[in-house]
Image (cartoon, rainbow, N blue to C red; front, side, top):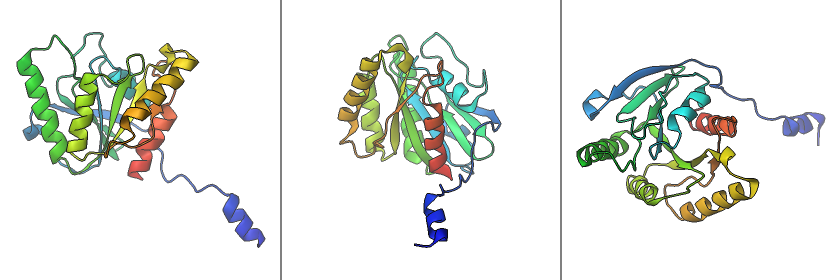
Length: 214
């Protein structure tokens, strides 16, 4: 084997592009499909139960404090919120689900909006489904998993608040979630474990997003 071929084998492929440190700005909030921005960029959506930590994770992911509004009040995100990250991708913060006190009419409206968005957005590359590691996959999460499978939308589970668990508990929740999604047709098989407060898993999540785009 020549010296040149040895060199080629040992060299890691160059990173095509990195979004780390690039500007991310709010674009729009929509309550109906009429308000959707043109499909000029690929889209990555973030879904999860109310208070799962979506806004905190998005802020940490793009390293911009206060970009996505955080709140201790479940159900605050009631629209599809679009953010433009470096003119490369739209990040879409989807309405939180599973908030028991939300009026039925509001829940029905959110559900219609999300279903229509998932089924009609051809530039949607993946949905990152956030699951609170302390609670695991719950009934409302199962319903969303079913919806994503039926819509043939690729999705990947992201566990949040992993810093709240012990080492043993972390391994256990990852194993349980794997067992629940392994046979689901639209599920990407790699689970990303994160903590917005501790910055755990953010590089892995960012890399997963970049792998879809570049």
